[in-house]
Length: 359
Ligand code: ASP
Image (cartoon, rainbow, N blue to C red; front, side):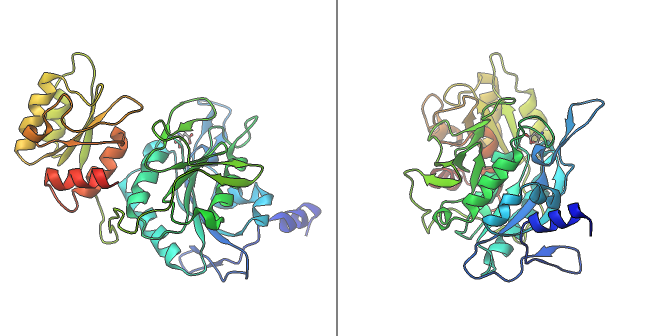
C-alpha cells in the first residue's frame, strides 16, 4: 500500500457497515458507547464539483464515500455508514425520492443500533424534503438534513463543516424527539419553520417566524427553548404509497390571472395551494375560480408569498363560505407537502384544516 493509501486508511471514518447483495450498505453492529449515524446522500451542491466550461459547477456529482472521506474528523464523532439514495440537484427532487427516503429512514431508525440519520441534500428544496420527512418519520431519533452553498473545491466551501455539524447533532441524544432538523452554517432549524432566504449568500436558511432552534459553537450543540414532540403529533404512514395526490401552487401578484388555476384543474390536480398576497389574499378572479373548484371537491389551501407571519382563517377571505383551508405558519411549498399527505386521508376542508392547525 502506498504512503497516501495508508494515510487514507488511517484517516477514513470508522465504519462497521456491511454491504448487502444489492450493494446497499447496512449499518453494522454498534461499537459500545459510540453513537451510530447513517448518512443518506441525495446530491446537491454539497456533492457538487466545479467545472471548467458552461455553468460554474454541477450539483450531485460526488458520492457518499467521497463526502465522508473528505471530513476525517467525522470518525471522532460517531460510527458512520452511508448510502446513495439519489445524486441530483434538489431542483429535481420529487415525491418518488421522498417516498423512498421516508421508507428508508423509518427502516433505519427502527434498527436498535442506529442512533440517527443525516441526509445530504441540495438547498433549493431542502425545506420541503425536511417537512415531508417530519410528517412521515415515526421515530423520535434524530434526522438531520444538511447541504452546502459552495461546491467541493470552491474557496471557502461550507460542505465539510456543515456535514461535521450535522453528524454532531444527529449523534447527540439531546436531539431526540425534536422532529426533523436542518443544520446549516452553525444553526439548527426545525423542519416546519425553516426556509431558504438567500439564493447566494451564507447563511442561506432562516426560520422567519420562530428563529433557529439552536446553534453549533465549537462543535457543541446548544438547543433553544423548545421541548420535544408531542406523542400525538401528526404523522402519516406512507409505507404503502407509490405516489402522492397531485397538488399545484399558484402565485399571487397584482392583476393575477385565473389561467394558471384553470390549467392545474384541467391537469387533474386534486388540491391547489395559493401563494397569495399579504395575509393570503387572492385577486377576485382567482378567488372566484378557486371557490368554484372548492365547491366541486378540490382542496384549496391559502398560504402567502410573504416570507413571515401566519396565514389565518377568515381575515379578509371568507374561508368558511368558500371551504378554504388556511396554511397558518406553513409557506406555500410546505403547505403543498402537507396537503398532498392530507389528501391521502381525506378531502374534507375541516379535517384538512385540523391537520394544518395540529402541525
Ligand atoms: N441547486 C442546488 C441544489 O439544490 C443548490 C444547492 O444545493 O445549494 O441541489
